[in-house]
Length: 58
Figure 1 (cartoon, rainbow, N blue to C red):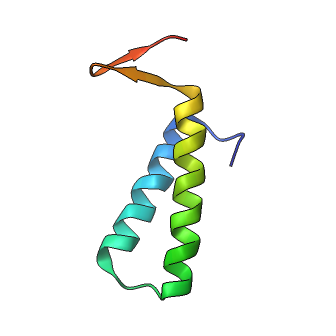
Figure 2 (figure 1 turned 135 degrees about the horizontal axis):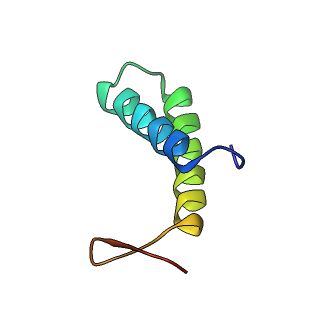
């Protein structure tokens, strides 16, 4: 997902969170979603710096 836009990554992350919160996935699938979500968060953090509620240009 490295070439996707920030908006697409954020949307995917929200979908992952909704699936995990619903609890309708197997443990194996939950682990896969967790790994994907962790990777997305790392990618977003590398693209954005957030400080005191504002986006800071690095």
